[in-house]
Length: 112
Image 1 (cartoon, rainbow, N blue to C red):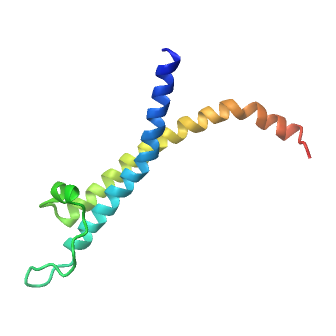
Image 2: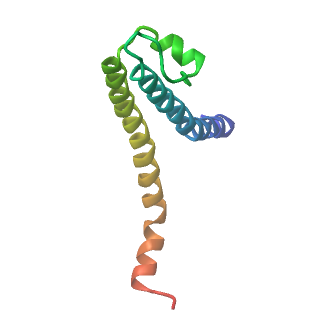
Image 3: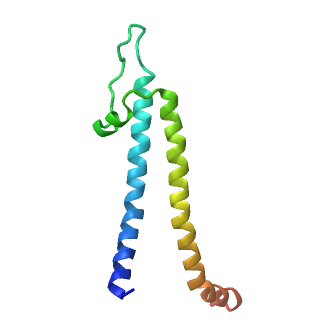
């Protein structure tokens, strides 16, 4: 692999990691908005609160019950946990391998 391709991959992965937190936040907030909306209907079947769910998520969640949306939240929790765990462990391993000699030098030869 040439150097330009490696840099492009690193930039793409960095952007994916940066924006994945926004995507996670968007998904979970909209799932909560939909659950809140579905749980506030009057006895005659009219909503008592406004639906703040985004239109694209509203189309995706159309016809789903509160239980199925709650199950979706668990699935997305697992997916994002694994996703962030993969990024975290690879980052920690790389940092430990690069910084281990500096750590031991500071541990055994403090510069106070």
